[in-house]
Image 1 (cartoon, protein in one colour):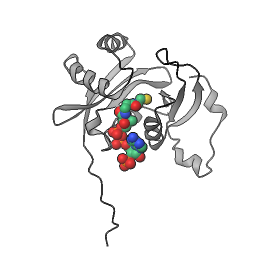
Image 2 (cartoon, protein in one colour):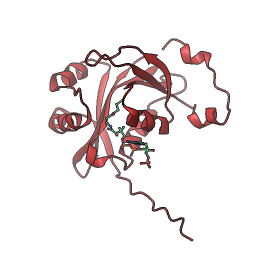
Image 3 (cartoon, protein in one colour):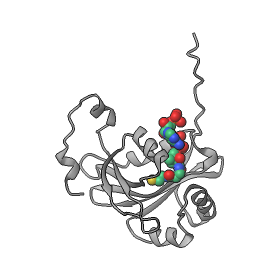
Amino acid sequence: MSTGRARKELVRVHIRWMIRRDMAEVLAAEAESFEFAWTEEDFLRCLRQRNCIGMVAEHQDKIVGFMIYELHKSRLHVLNFAVAPAARRQGVGGQMVTKLVGKLSSHRRSKITLAVRERNLDAQVFFRTQDFKATRVLRNYYGDSGEDAFLMEHRVGVPDAAEAEGGLVNRVAQYEEN
Ligand SMILES: CC(C)(COP(=O)(O)OP(=O)(O)OC[C@H]1O[C@@H](n2cnc3c(N)ncnc32)[C@H](O)[C@@H]1OP(=O)(O)O)[C@@H](O)C(=O)NCCC(=O)NCCS
């Protein structure tokens, strides 16, 4: 018997390191995604840092998403993350998060952190579906708009559902040093 709910087609992506040649497509996706978009110089300044990594998600030779993150001693910090509007709601963002989560380990980098604008409800909902939770408010975080941010984090082996079901979560650990 049919459930009456069509199974959604996912866009399968290949996620690889970003290279200089990707920049035009990345900048286009960036401009379509953010009111205060990064410039090419912003990307390059960031990627020149030794601990900064850029990755792109490709589908049929087109870049449909990208992410920039920093490697810290005990965490990954995501600085930029977007899926091109035409490719959204097809599982691309979810596959990008899965790739990041695959880089975590319980004894080394055990969490992913990122800041989301207070007004960016879509991203907040998206990251909640990916087992991130908001742990802190960062007041006046953005120099451009003065907006607050929510710090969201995903911890290895701590699915959000466990908390929703009353599972034990060490709240003290949320404030421990990064
Ligand atoms: C947030 C973003 C990355 C999500 O990417 P995506 O590829 O569309 O995400 P997915 O298709 O993997 O979504 C997985 C689930 O997240 C939730 N979700 C994603 N986008 C959502 C939205 N706009 N509104 C509500 N829920 C959303 C849904 O539950 C979705 O599952 P469903 O489509 O089966 O309902 C994308 O919308 C984006 O690039 N936004 C602009 C840039 C941005 O805000 N980046 C984050 C900066 S911190």
